[in-house]
Image (cartoon, rainbow, N blue to C red; front, side, top):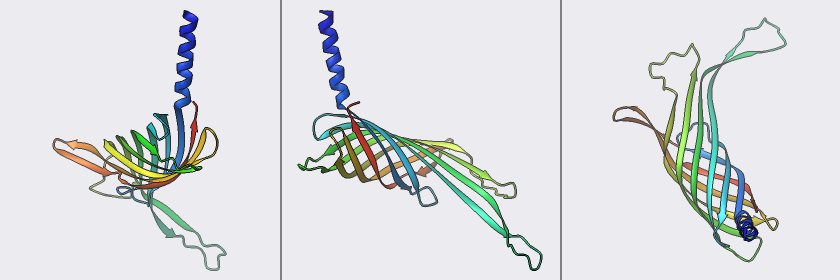
Length: 209
């Protein structure tokens, strides 16, 4: 009896593991509230197939962007010198680290070939940490404070899934991330950071874990 139960449990776990999918990827993400033209966002996701078309997924992303303002000052050299040098001074540096965690459903449309289109929708929660570093020479009465912002968000996207092997596929697509994160400054006073924007990238999907 015990052997039968153990065998049944083992088979159930094997079937569950066969339905699990691991996805890793990188995309170019351009949030509206961050200066510097966007940057790379790394993604790691886990999914479980409901059937051939539908897969439930959970995904965490990491985005890090640093913006520097530099002042270039030429250095005087003696007349006839064979080199021309200059000094660069960093007036300030802004850094944004963003961690959205989302869960949702991806729907693949079987087309009978190796390439199949897909669409996805997600809901989640985003955390962003903002830091500022000013040089001592910069004097400003309105320097912002470092802090952590948070808030609920959503994401929609679509693309194509290229089947590589029996349990592997290459993904390519575009998405829109809708997320405004906030920080409480005082009673009835909040600061918002818009982390909404377009992204596009590629990833690798592996099944059978």
